[in-house]
Image 1 (spheres, rainbow, N blue to C red):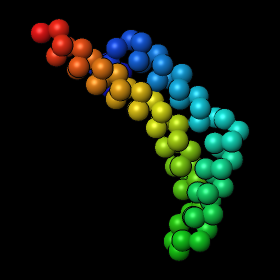
Image 2: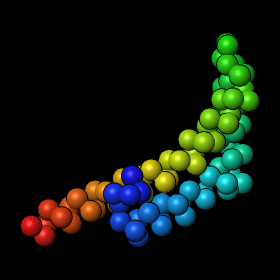
Image 3: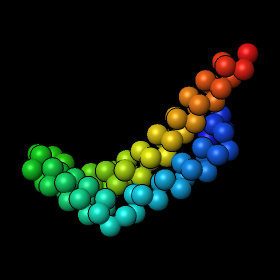
Image 4: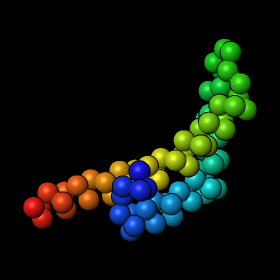
Length: 80
């Protein structure tokens, strides 16, 4: 997605990915994921908690890159 998005949106998206390392995000998301994994039968809390942190890290990057693609598409439609 970064290849097709604009340079500005690509830069902003990877900067937004730093949100995942915030103390509030990691604390709450990891606690929720571990709590769910311990109550559900057949789930490994360590693996499921790691997966949730990965999703939290990727969500802002993918959201901003998607916005960049939409912006680029709308810009090309209005030019032609």
